[in-house]
Amino acid sequence: MPIQTIADVDWLQRNVLVRVDFNVPVENGRVVDNSRIRAALPTINYLAERAAKVILLSHLGRPKAQKNLKYSLRPTATELSRLLGRPVVFLEDCLGGDVQAIIGKAENGSVVMLENLRFYAEEEGNDNEFARKLASYGDAYVNDAFGTAHRAHASTVGIPSLISTKAAGFLMQKELEFLGNRTSNPDRPFTVILGGAKVSDKIGVIDALLDKCDNMLIGGAMAYTFFVAQGREAGNSLVEADRVVDAKAALQKADKKGVKIFLPADSVIADAIDFEARTIGTTKIISGDIPNGWKGVDIGPKTVEVYGDIIKNSKTIFWNGPMGVFEISACSEGTFAIAGAVAQSNGISIVGGGDSITAINKGGFSNKIDFISTGGGASLEFLEGKELPGVAMLNDNHGA
Ligand code: AMP
Image (tube, rainbow, N blue to C red; front, side):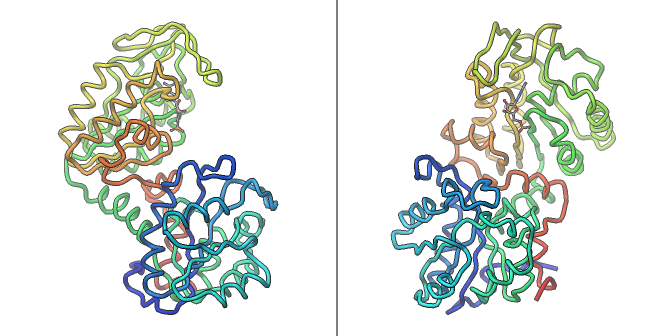
């Protein structure tokens, strides 16, 4: 069943419960990265302009079911108000008599934000009664929080199961379009770039994307598990011995499907690295296998060139995961070079995952990327082909 989109519904004078993802970094009571708030503005503005009361629901951090003001959403309300250029009514709780009364008094077109849903264990527990109370504040529901759509919580599943008028917000629609349609029916060649520490986190995505892509470029520590799968030496690199079998299966599948998997032709290697202290011992660049006593910590310049050429000639690109320990500058060049290549490509570029997004932002490339997914874990699960409970709930046939 198709999901309803926000443009399909008449919102006039509706009280719309909008699940947003304002789980943003806050320091000293101020939002330090407002990108998730900015990403929700089109939906909030659209509803408010159509004279709906917009009632925002979100979580922030992991307050462990305690009213811990360190995790208050108040700073996000202040930031949202600044971005909207008008007041946002912030409520110090998400439940209680005041909530109903204040929403009742609010004018059509106004924006109200409730306090962190995760101050209550019932949110993550998808408690019926909790969902029923929250649902009673509205008569329509919009989910614009793709990042939590893979969780069956009260605000993603409980509430929409009780409300018949519901839709995907603009951000949610964009996520589904870029991570869904654009990777399922891609303009070709379609190149997937995967990096990061662990094969175990990404094996589902590797497997699913091997059905869709033409090239898979692998970097990060993950590459060295693939080295071992090919019977090559990985030295002291971070290898997941129990995942070598998965890497072998991926290589075989790629072979059968005619998908080209690329591994680093050269690497930056280090004889010691302390991630916590952000320090590194001696480094050098070598071609091929990693010698004993050394760890692969970044892709080398030859690899950057090879990967860069493939990226340049691709019509669709999906990138998730850093090419090395990019938090330490001596092993960050590969990741930033790939970020630059993705940004410069004329193909449709899609980037997901916290570290790749950090690299894109730090490199100043964000305005050159077609779509930056806010999803994290949800993006990976969706790409794996799993049904996300929060998305399924937006189907017309689910719930009330
Ligand atoms: P993930 O969460 O799996 O995407 O992994 C991200 C982490 O992988 C980052 O913190 C990187 O520092 C780390 N990483 C990337 N390449 C390597 C490598 N060659 N060795 C150790 N850690 C790496």
